[in-house]
Every structure is written in C-alpha cells, then in structure tokens.
Length: 286
DNA sequence: AGGCAGGCTTTCT
DNA sequence: AGAAAGCCTGCC
Image (cartoon, rainbow, N blue to C red; front, side, top):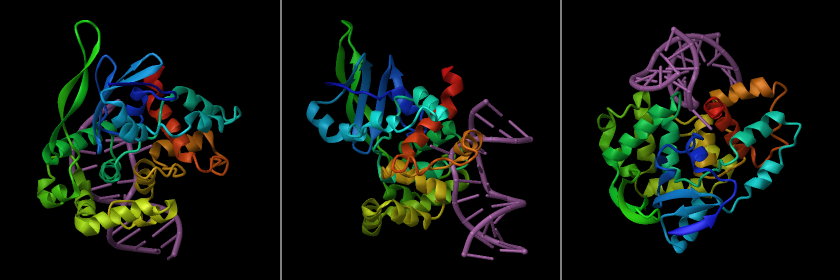
C-alpha cells in the first residue's frame, strides 16, 4: 500500500465528470480504477489517499495516470473573479482532474459517447470488456475486522485490443447497445489493428494538437467534437475544447459574447471539464 | 466551398 | 415526448 497527500483531487468527482466510464465506487469511499496500465483501488483518508500498490508502481504508473505533475491550483488561478460562472463551476468541481487514459480506449469510448447518454455508454463499455477483454488479477483494498486497510487480490477485465474487436466483425458487436455506432467501432478497430494500426497510433501520439485533430477527423464516425475529446482525454492536449450539447448550452447562457478562448489559451480543456461537471452534477450536489 | 436538414440506434428523464 | 459528451449523407 502507498499513502500520499494529493491536493485538488476527488475521485468521486472524477468518476462523475464524464471522462471515464469504468471507474466505480465499491464501498465506503473505495474507488476501483481499471486503466490500460493495470488495476488499482484507492480511498481517501482525510488529507491523504491510500492506494493498493507499492510506492514504486505508484511513481512509475499511477502518479502520471492521475496527472499529479500538473498544477491544477495554477489553472484555477487563471480564472478571474469577474468570471463568476467559471468560479462557481470550479468551486463545485474542485477535485476534477484530466486523467492520462489510454488513447485506444478513448477512441472507442468517445465514439460510443456520440448522441448518447452516460448510463448507456457505461453499459456498452462494460459489455465490450466482458465480451472481448482479458481477465486479470490486481490488488484491491478491504477493511479488516480491526479497522485497518489490507490488500487483497481481485479480478478485473482489461479493455479489449483493436484486433479482438476487429475480428469480431459487425455481427460480433451486436447486443452491446452500440446502435448505429457499431460500424464506427469496427472501422476504428480495423484502423488500429496490426503493425499499420500501431504505426498510426504512434503517429497520433507524436502529433501536435492541430495535426492530431486532422488525423482523427479522417476516421469514420469521428467528427469535431469526438476528435477534441480524444485530443483532450487520450492525448492530453489540454488546449482542446470539446463543445457538446451541454457546453453549447453553457456558452449561449453565460457567454453570449463568446467564450474567451484567448484568455484561457492552453488550458481551455481543463476549464471545460469544470463546466461540464458543474452542468451535469449541480442538481444532485445541491 | 461550406452550411443545413434529415436520419440514425437505444436508453434515460 | 424529447434529449443524450454527434456524425454521415445528400442537397443547395
């Protein structure tokens, strides 16, 4: 186990921020996270977090995954008090961070997300992993009878590879609740399969934001919005600013003169996450 | 060329 | 019924 103090992070808020669809609360504030890198569970203990891994693994994998190198307090300071809407959104979603998730997984999940609702997206992603992922074991946390946290082995499903989805074919993708998006998923799986696919993914990672966005737009089923989500959540181009139906409503309501993208250059995507979180969680939180 | 209407699967509110 | 982290096609 590893204990560490982390500021500007709340796992419940991250789970409800619409950027990841496989995080879940097990019990008593214990969160399970399945990433390309593996599996971990975490719980908050006042100022600190307790993770179900050793320090070495945390430093090499999870510190990066939770984006701990980034200064979120610094991002927040860039929003002036005059911008009362964004100040309120940040107050509401103070613990949201942009996770460093797997690029391939972000491609699939954000294609699924189009014209869709979050419960259904989660269902499709879960079914996809159940059907085509691999079963692995990783360490989790349990509270022992004397009130101490202990590590236990748990089993989890990995996110399926491009090849496993591609070989399933269209018929293999039925019953997952993908709807008309099934052909988009098959297409992106084919694009990412084999040596050619690996090369394309590697090139995407190398590219800057403009170039990556253009590469993504060439894929079937990826438009401007999904491309921006992949740039933001899969490539960590935090200047990307996905405009979906919720953000569109926010912009017309609070920024009728236009959102000051210039002022927030280089961090618009992070602010977009606070806005999105506030929009879909404000009612439940009040 | 660039913009717009209509259609698309299915679930949730 | 209308909306949901939209995109594709065909038409102008």
